[in-house]
Length: 230
Image (cartoon, rainbow, N blue to C red; front, side, top):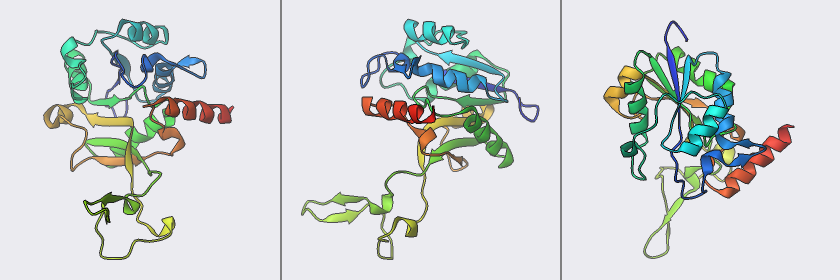
C-alpha cells in the first residue's frame, strides 16, 4: 500500500514460448527465470498482493513453489499467440477487484530489483500520474539510424534541421521501453485499455537492470551480469 492506495502485482506468464521453449521457467543462475521476478516483487514495500496469470500448469507449479499466489488459471482466450498483452491484465483486475493500482511485472526482466519496482510506483505518485512505465537509454541512438531507400541511399529515420552529431554525448537523450515495470490506476487502465498514452510518464532504469530475455543470447548476458555481481 502507498498513500492509502492498495496495489495489485501481476506476473503474466503464458506457456508456449516460440523463441526459447519453456522460457519463463528456464534456468538462470540456478533459479527458474520467473523466480527472479517473484523474489523482487515480494520485497516491494508497496505491493499488497502478488499473483500469477498463466495458462500453463508447469509455470503455475514453479511459481507456486517460489511463493507466488495463483488464484485463477488464465482462460485460453487470453493465452493465444495474438492475444493483446493488456487482456490478461484487465482479466486479472476483473477477477481481483478492490485495488487502486496495478503493477505489471514481466518475468523476462530478471535483473529488475525491488528498488526499481518501488521507484516506479513512487515516481507515479510524485507525478500524480495515471500511469508510469519503466524506460532505459538504448544502446544505439535513433538519431544514428537510417532506412535504405530503393536506390540504396541512407535516409535518416529522424529528420532534423541540423547535421547529425558525430559524438554520442552531443545527441539528445532518448529512452526506450524496457518492459520491466508498468504501473497504472486500475480504473484508468480499464478505460484506456493500454499503459501507453499521452499521459504516461517514464521512470528511467539502468541498462544492466533492463535486460529483457527474448533469446538465448539475452539469457547468457543476464547470467554474465549476475555472475559479475557475486
